[in-house]
Image (cartoon, rainbow, N blue to C red; front, side, top):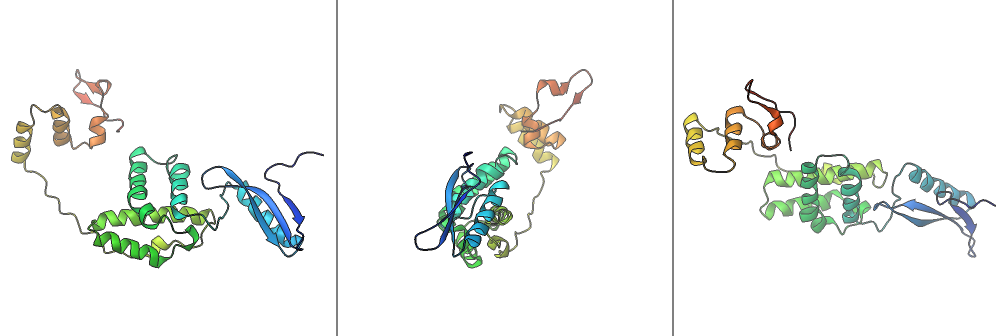
Length: 231
C-alpha cells in the first residue's frame, strides 16, 4: 500500500462517536503542522478536511484560533512584503510593525481584532505625541496586513480600514532662494558630500539618484550625466 502524502489527510472515528480528520497544513511562519478537525458525521469531518486541503493547495496558512496578530505580522513581513517591495519600503514597514503595531496590538488574536481595538490604538498613538502623518502610516501598514489576511481567508473584515484619523495637515515647503542656495554651497564647500549637494541643487535629483551615480554615468567629453537608477 502506497504511503499517504502529508497533504492527503486521514479520517477516523473516535471512541466517543465523533469523526476526526487530520491533515498537515501550512503555518504563517512558512512551515507545516498537523491539524485536526471534528464532525458529528464522517461527511462533516470530510468537508472540513477538504477545506483545509484546498487552503494548503493554494499555499494559504490554516486558520488558528490562537494565532496572534504579532505572529501574523511577522509572517506577512517575511513571506509577503520582503519578496515584493524595495528595501526602503520594507524597512519602513518593519519599523512600524516592530516599534508600534506589535507592542500595541500584537498579543490580540488575529481574528478578534475589532475596529474599536484599532481606533483605541491609533488614538493612543496620537496622544503619545506621534504626528498625524506617522499614525496614518501605522494604519496603512496594518490595513495592508489585514487585506492580505482577508485574501488568505483568515479574517473576514479589515478593521484598520474602518478606523478613522484626522487628515494630514497640508505641507508648506518654502524653497530656498538662489542667494540662500549659494550661501549653503559656500558653507558646505569643504564637506565630503559637497558634489552631492551641488547635484541636488542644480539638477533637482533625488537623494537616491545622486548616491547611485558612478563614473560610468558621466561623459566629460560630451558634458552628459546619465541618471539610470537609484539606491
